[in-house]
Image 1 (cartoon, one colour):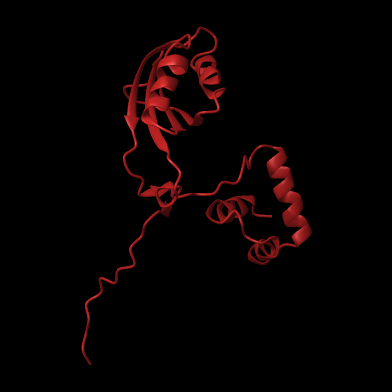
Image 2 (cartoon, rainbow, N blue to C red):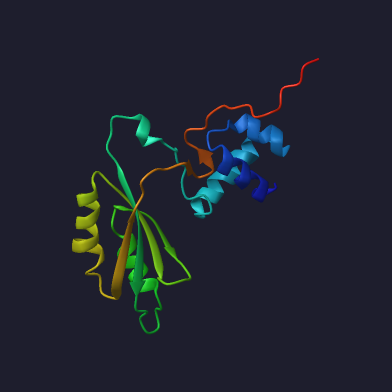
Length: 161
């Protein structure tokens, strides 16, 4: 089975029916199920997520991107600091990056104060963290490849016959 093709299909549509996957991959449904279960067990597939446009709900959400500067530890590099940061449920994503900071942390909170409290009380005091820069997300246009508020607009030139 072409596992890369399977993964790409699931990335674009995690709700696709097993029967449709089997047809696309020219495999049996049983083989598709077995492969998906194995990939989940091996942590190749780590989860399935729903993209939500929170602006269209009555729920408050405040998202932030936090640049974290850190000092690497002997024998561990940045991994130990990353493990400490990743433990917090507020942390949605954590990346080791190149540039002026070592980490990029994405978090969601209810308010700017909640995010600020997380940074000041939990993130900044972590051993190895030397500085943080918090960037609040003002508006989300596209998440995980999905345009949130796409306006249907036909910009083609009209031709009279």
